Image 1 (cartoon, one colour):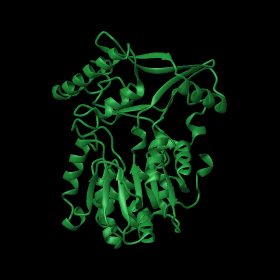
Image 2: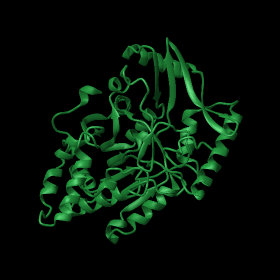
Image 3: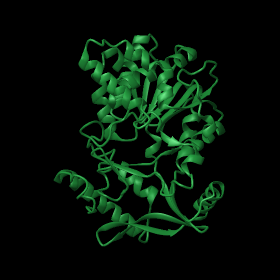
Image 4: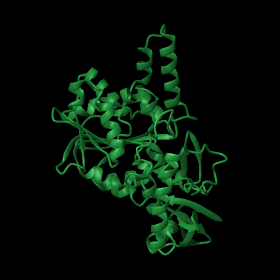
Length: 394
């Protein structure tokens, strides 16, 4: 077991350690089957999604104060209410058959907040579909959304795959792309090496090997475009473009909206960002060791929004806007929603004010998180994408 960081991070209980131990045993078997090397994207996929054992598949709650991190929907209802204001205009433009499809719905809190606000606005979708890979996450969502009023809960449906036919409405995801499996690399003096996982006895350790032709070509192009010097380490997500393309392809009319932390490619691969963006989260502490207790911590990286835009446009979508989360929420009326609160209710007003700060401040989510939207056959402007637009950074 990899316990080397246990002095800095709280150690899990015995049941959780057993889950991680079982996952590590499977990883060791795959390392041996691969001749002593497991590519990082395969390791990351197992660490997050291995059935019954991976971080999002083992039933250990990752969200909220008792988990490892807090997403925007976990902060309160303001994020979902603002998002609903943006989606409402698209649903109205598409018509009575408009639907919503949330990809990776987390705890279900965002779905609950969006549906409640859309009902208040008189703009409910015909169906609120959820595409969720993890059975454990689906169970969490079922539990949360079953507490909705019956007419709202009846509109929710879980899908096993993207719709077979074309989709009319909004396809959206919040903090999904950052968890797609990554390939890690090291570039030094023109040589490209792939970083993966090996073993030293029972322990998982970092290993390197010469990169294959596809990764070498990609990294050398990035190095030339960004004028790297010295030793440069980072990551690349080959799954990102196909994933975005699959979402774009099903959209006949409406909007594709993605929210996550990330950069345009020039910022992502800036020469000074020479250690990449990979980050792990455990009990609200961030660190950089993905091999520590696999299955019990989140592994994530920033999103290359230039790749997102290229894939969506290649699939025939039109870029609607690219904004910081703070500017997007301002455009969706977060200040008005806060102003509607009863200032005399001091406790509630303070709670809402703290929620706004977490969502909006540059040192919190406001600038690190970006919102990007693409449309097909949509004649209306999407609320939230005002000035300034950041598409020049893509």
